Length: 132
Image (cartoon, one colour):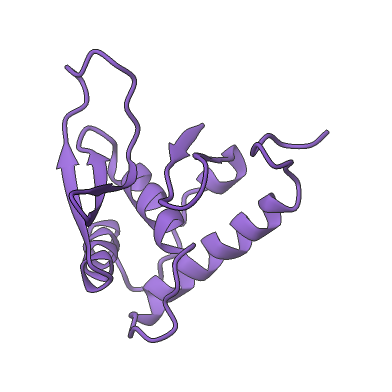
């Protein structure tokens, strides 16, 4: 289970059900989708930085954080491309994106993540642990 950190919320655990691979990106290849998600983050003022977490000595997860008043999304560069897409898309899906042009294939992926996150939120208690 991956952990995604949002600025104003407790760490959010992405449930296994959200880890489905969206292979029907229609006309976009995985690398194009990931680059489009990084460009969207940039439009939102979020810097996406890929870092190696292997030698940190502590357990570190990819996620959104604030460094010196700058929003940054720090991604483990050793994750596979599908995992990078899932982690970044689940973060961006929870942000306000109404006034930003997003390529339809990318918006479709974000909408699916948003629906799944909202559906999952109804099945969890306040600590983020799934009910029954």
